[in-house]
Amino acid sequence: MFSDIIKNLLSEVAGVEGIPTIGAFNIRNNGKSAGRSSTETIQIIPKPDGTGIDIMIKPGTKNESVHIPALVTETDMHDVVYNDFHIGEGADVTIVAGCGIHNCGSGISQHDGIHRFFVGKDAKVKYVEKHIGEGDGNGQNIINPQTHIFAEENSYLEMDTVQLKGVDSTKRISTAKLGAGATVVIKEKIMTHGEQYAETSFDVELEGEGCSAKLISRSVARDSSKQLFRSKLCGNNACYGHSECDAIIMDNGIVAAEPEIIANNVDATLIHEAAIGKIAGEQLTKLMTLGLTEKEAEAQIINGFLK
Image 1 (cartoon, rainbow, N blue to C red):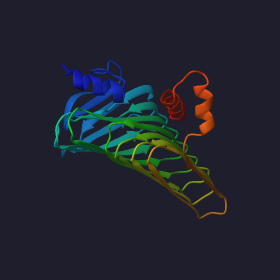
Image 2 (image 1 turned 90 degrees about the vertical axis):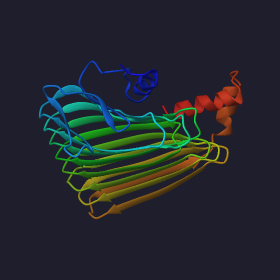
Image 3 (image 1 turned 120 degrees about the horizontal axis):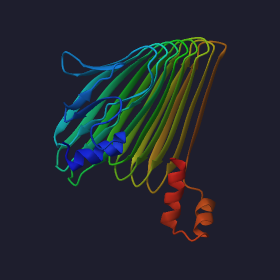
């Protein structure tokens, strides 16, 4: 049913090689649906204006998954999609998204995915998002994901996002507004090379009593690539927020971190940590004494750092 290119992209970004055999799914390719299925407890409904889908997860749904990968396999294609997730009270689900671009032309292939999560009381969500670019053309691959989270009382959302190859430019925006006792954990891993540019922006409003947020970014900037990390934690109640940015720079890479923490309540505890630097010489020496070349030693250190 799918070409080898599509199968490979699906495997890379969503862990499937074709139509998923378990759970609900929506596969998007070049701005159109390439397959869709709902389950008894998870309904995927196209928006009337064709701009995206609504994913309706019934209260109490447990141990189910949703796959919604988006692919771009044409050059000169700009795909924009708006997806809304409505997670019912007490649900516990895994959502696998991600975008893969295969550009063999000279134009720009771009995907902008805007996702909103309405997480119900006591619900738990694991959200996995991977981005890759490939193709033997000289066109650009651009991916601009947005994730906006509205977390109700005692809910939990963990987001793992990865971008390690082939994306020339990305602007990644994540926002969250947390109710009482709600928790959001966002982890990102990014590697850039050549002339690539990656920008990350986290903006979290800790509104409810006892809510918490943890933002973790690990990145590697190689060659002449550039990265910018921005984070903002705003504590408006008794809450806890922790933002952490760790980056390795290599060659002529550039990494900038711009943290902001604002406490509007005497019981708000907010922390930011940032560390940017090159690979330590003693780490390379230790691995090279075990028989690795310098390049092999660098690869081992980077793989461990981004694991």
